[in-house]
Image (cartoon, rainbow, N blue to C red; front, top):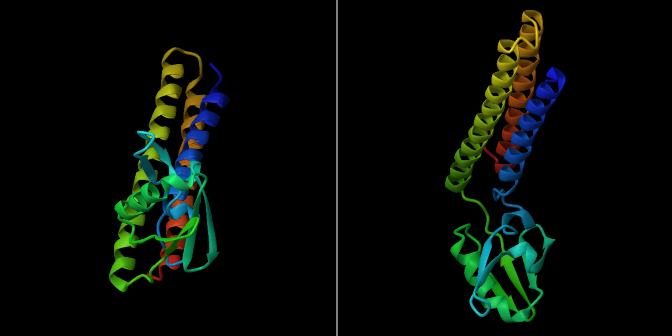
Length: 188
């Protein structure tokens, strides 16, 4: 059992938790149009009897800061896409325009900004929980190695400190990401 590998795997799991948090916060609408706001919406295609993510069935672009355009690869599914975006409950109402849908991004109200800030904090806390779970799993592996007499008491203490340092660093990174998102939302 390699102690360095256990610690590296734990640190990698924590980094993935931060990446997950960053991705989740990127999907929050900050008043600026972004393809990430809608790209993972699941679209049920009536004629095919299946579901698919929006980004897998269309080109999504932002021609300006206030709108998103969705150009389906198959024009026959445009109505299904329109319904899916509307039912996603993200405040975007797509408008069909020829071969594409124009999705105007509405201005955020003060109330909506506060609501989104709360959602950002919830997602950040989910990320912190993921980090703590990675720490717990890592520490359990280290303690098992110690119990099985594969590492010394000194190695155990050193490894625990290393894992805690990584946990603290990743927690601070989530704090930084949330503060940046709050600044984007215009709330402090």
